[in-house]
Image (cartoon, one colour):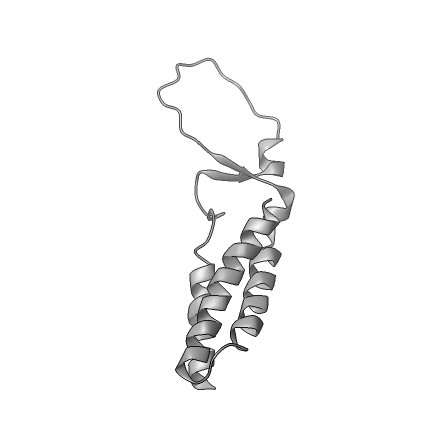
Length: 104
C-alpha cells in the first residue's frame, strides 16, 4: 500500500505542473480583464503575450477528476510493481486528459 500512496503523491504533484500558473504575471482572470483602466498618453516600448483564463479555469476539477479516475483504472491493471506503475501512469494520463476536457 505504501508504494501506491507514493505513486499517488508523485502523480498529484506532477499534475499540479500542468497548464498555466495563475501566479504568473502573464495570466489574468476574466474579471481582471474586464476592469476599467486609467489611460495615459505614452509610447509603447514592448508588448508581451498574456493569457486570459476562462471562468471555469479557477478550479481544476477536470484535472482532479481525471487523476482520480486514472488511479482507479490504473489500479485494476497488472500486479505488484506493474500495478503501482500503471496506477501512477493512470493518474498522470487521467489528469492531463481531464485538463484537456475541461478546457475544450
